Length: 258
Image (tube, rainbow, N blue to C red; front, side, top):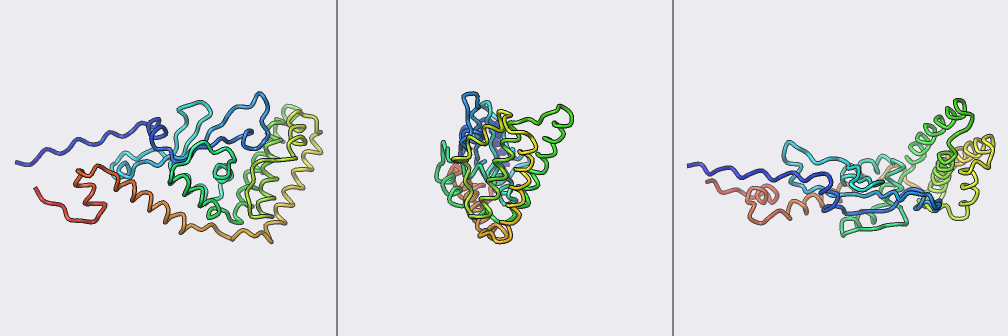
């Protein structure tokens, strides 16, 4: 008589994945940039490692989870690495937050890989993102007579970050002694023509820095992929020892026939 098939393992909820499988968590936004005020929210970002077994069925784990707490957003490790290799500004900055709240062994190894994600591609991705945000500010100016000053401040900060990263090869989030001039923009104390000129100058300086940047032309994709494969394999091997099917697949061994 053929033995009954085992019951499928329940797929964890997105909230459970974040709660039980986060490998890295940090604070982002104004608090990480050194631009927080009394009214600032606390934006939390994180990376979770979905158990490898969840990728073997038809229902895949989510690539990202919004929540469960307010102002919280997390990415699954593979998606996070994929976006970082594309020089996504938000992802790269997440890896360099000065406000790390949690990192397990995998998270610490991810942090140790920070430089592998950096390349001269940041000039294109940061600039493209900045152009999009600048068009929105100009639309606000046309339609409402003034831009959203908070967004203008953050765009200036982003352009400074891109320029300095291309010049030095180091991504630094805290604005340091540029805090007060940037907060003056947020308060609407700097006329738009001056802000607009400041943005133009920063974009030009970033472009000039790209031609002689110490950053490599491309990120170290192989190094990042080796890391991802290793943690996926380690996750698979953590499956219960009595799960013969899983262990046979992972270790490449033969399975006993019933």
